Image (cartoon, rainbow, N blue to C red):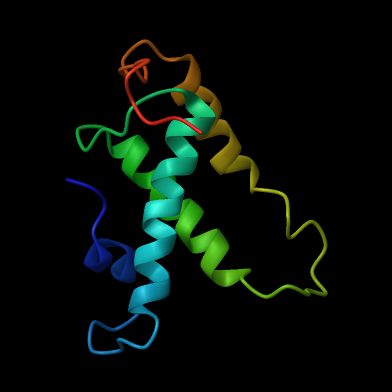
Length: 105
């Protein structure tokens, strides 16, 4: 089971009855999960709160910085906390590696 829309909306502090961004958020969840798997080489795991947190953090970062143009500096860089989690997951033996038979880009 992947990170749910409800979990991410709670993380983003978006009321459940506000549904206009649900499709966007759902696509960001899928993209964040794919990004984590492809970047770390490790399969998604619901059993790891660290993996779940990384997906939520990526979705939040992309959701809050979704415009093409921004006056913020370093908006294209991931925050250090996300990079540290990604690095940890990629190096930790706790996480199952993606197999050769899995869909990879």
